Length: 615
Image (cartoon, rainbow, N blue to C red; front, top):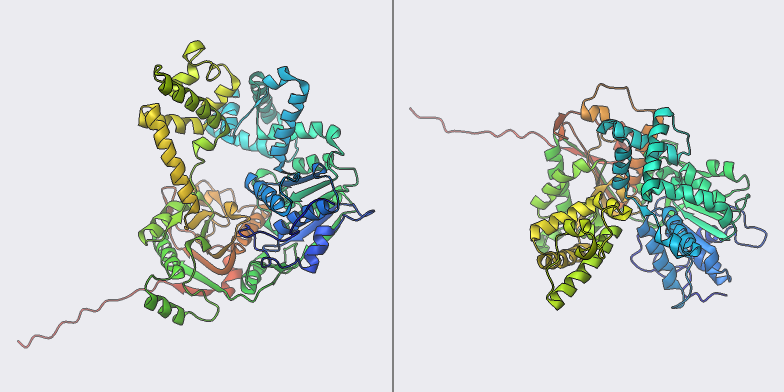
């Protein structure tokens, strides 16, 4: 058997709620992680696992179990939807193995394709490896599409680009105008040695017949989010009967229809593999029963995972606030967050705890236990401002730092080497980044390829490059630039360690958990989202039923990020995108209202009493 230690015991700090440290898996978890592994029982398996049911634990436990049974790690593949989740899974498996043991592959589907593409080029020899394509970021891909189709307006370019992305994910043949624009875009990429993320899946599909049989077991996290073309790629890597497939996910959290994911479920997967075995996890190790019941009621019988029972007897506090405007709503969020964090004065803290009703949160939370979840990024600034004004430390999402960009990172590494050499030898100072990029020959061409190179072109089109140049222009010299960069790195590390209230979109919160969650902006037009109401366009009618159901599932995701506290709110009016809006409360509130303690601002009338004159 493989060297495995502490099998199926999760380390501390896991991103999803799990049973207490050292507790063995429950019988239903154990049955799920072992399903389809016995001789003669290698058929496809799908596990329906609701919020907090321990999806990550099951995946890692299954990998450990297979390794302990003697499976070759090179024949195990685990697929997730984010690089962060893939990295966490690798760390979890490595922690369970004897140091130095081989690890199974844990990656995203796009990351797997990119790795295999480079592997194929290396096997083809040095000449092919030297012509390795450049992978475009999402922004760079859109600009390349625009460059390839110069006759289109900006709005039409964006519209066609989104339609093309959707058609590719759904494996649909585009109509004439879109097909022509797509062909010009493909020719533009081919001439410059460029690839986008959609090309990676297409390459994997084409390569799949030669790869079939390489992995005996393929595990897929968040299987409900597989788009049709991604599911086709997974199917192509497996035997016809699907043996070796193990998917785990929650169809009730399928929230990526706008990206082409159609919401895979036991029914849709059975169409691919009629012998699919389906199991369900019925316990949540994250949330209180009141939170689970509220979220379940929101689905109004549409849920596909079945009811969830809380594994622990947790109390809960659920509130619904009606605000006159967005500013009052933001102040309420800040005040409630202050109350959840408690006071530095023990007497005030004790008083707050004494007033708390049974089951309510008592002011003992840390900032990292709290999240504010919004539907649109435009809602974030006023909420962040209100929290900061109230002295509540908060963190809002920022643009990806330019030094994390792969191409920018390579450029910076080369430039730093040349900068250090010039300082040590007393050579002429290094020119600006723009000059280095454009230079040829002795002026810098050996540092970075000339401007005609496809990688240089892709880098110049990226937001990361503009951020790099902006910082360099602010500094003026490479000495000052690298000094500032060192401080920025340090600030980033400090921020990562700091305890802050998180403000993020509901989409970005998926897979995370908090003790208390705020859900502001529950209005018809915001959640469910209806852009005609927000932007004042001539109305095209109500959103279709599929869109409304995805918005319902999105609110379900937001509610189930909370373990013990849900603080929902809506406003009679707010300013968004420079427009004054008066939106009706969300239709979803009709369901969850009955579970919440409701409050609103009341008008106070001040009386000025004056004594009567004696004259």
